[in-house]
Length: 85
Image (cartoon, rainbow, N blue to C red; front, side, top):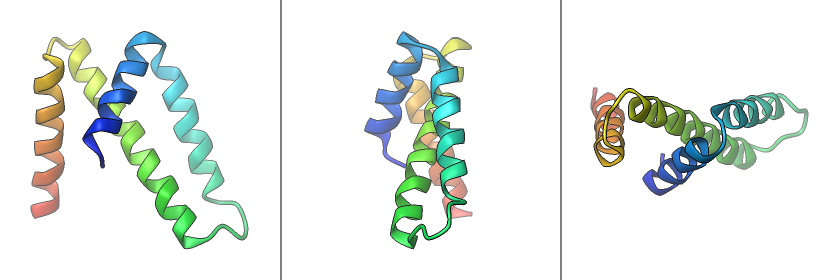
């Protein structure tokens, strides 16, 4: 996951609507089932999907009242904490 992408996507959600990002992620998920897709392509798609769902989570925290900077920090700490386990 890349924090600058998550931040950018969360701003996009704020300016537009979360449904756009949900639908884009679902489209990418469907694309992973296409025949003949290469492993490298799956890696890129997977990274994009992860960033999209991360941005949705961050934006949800912001809507709940968390400061943007703190929401991004908390999210990344949670991700890094789950990696260490």
